[in-house]
Image (cartoon, rainbow, N blue to C red; front, side, top):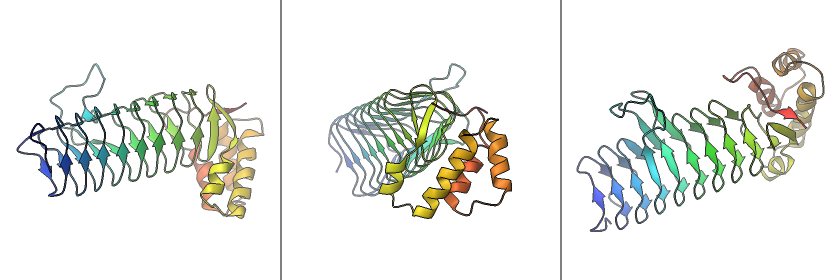
Length: 259
């Protein structure tokens, strides 16, 4: 159902059961999958695509122009939001900076009120951004990560899957998978509560602990230590290997440090 006061561009593609609330706007070329719901005053910008069952709450804007001074507004880029993701009030998600590319939000996510996802970000599935969280451009967030309220993440940083970033943290360096980050680029061990809630098997948790200590309890560069740990062949679980391999990638070249 489309409210009479809503503005839907003729070229937008809406599934038959989409709900568009009062004064909501759907711009040219936007695509809304089955079961999507736009609350009053929600805005879906040009070329943005919402998967099945996405909810966009009041005054949220999906697919706005990047806040990049070099960006050409004529660039035909877009935004994709995965199935069943919930976008709460005043959330802003910006489209990619290059033609043919998209800012990507995974399925089953929750972006709480006032959170911001900048251009070219990639969020995995089941990601939660709490109120007022800010992701700079090109940030990658892995599956099932939780970024708490008021957190600021520098452009090009990575937040590994399953990581928990505590409230009001400042992140300018990469946070490895399943780590607990806080303050300014500090890690305080593994996100053990999150691992327990996700019922990660005990052997995997044990290996993760060994991998964590191999990188953070020994003097040396994190990538070198991670490579040495992998070379031993002593890590069989995907969780431990993913943790160690994380240090071999990324663009920042810097990693959060133990407190």
